[in-house]
View 1: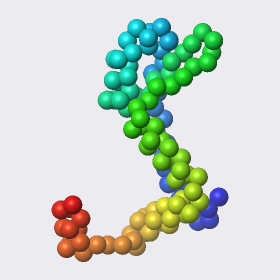
View 2 (view 1 turned 180 degrees about the horizontal axis):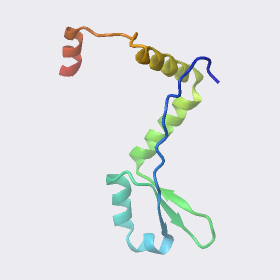
View 3 (view 1 turned 120 degrees about the horizontal axis):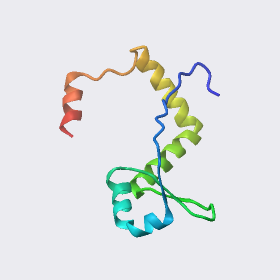
Length: 105
């Protein structure tokens, strides 16, 4: 898609916890806490086959932001260019004073 680009992302596939709707219903608070605190996606299975997934709002927002970036050709191009300059050690190099200012934030 982009010329002279290097893969930006290495996918880390995580196993999704899968439980029945009855088990979820019996311990909804525990599973919701797990989704929020451990950032664990939970697939809830139903006999009808119409499953659903529970994730924290924070994780959902992060996923939405990632999808936005992935769909934005301009941002993807900037990321690819930035990665190339980083790998070539030719990107911006802040001075020690600039680094100190950044670290104080």
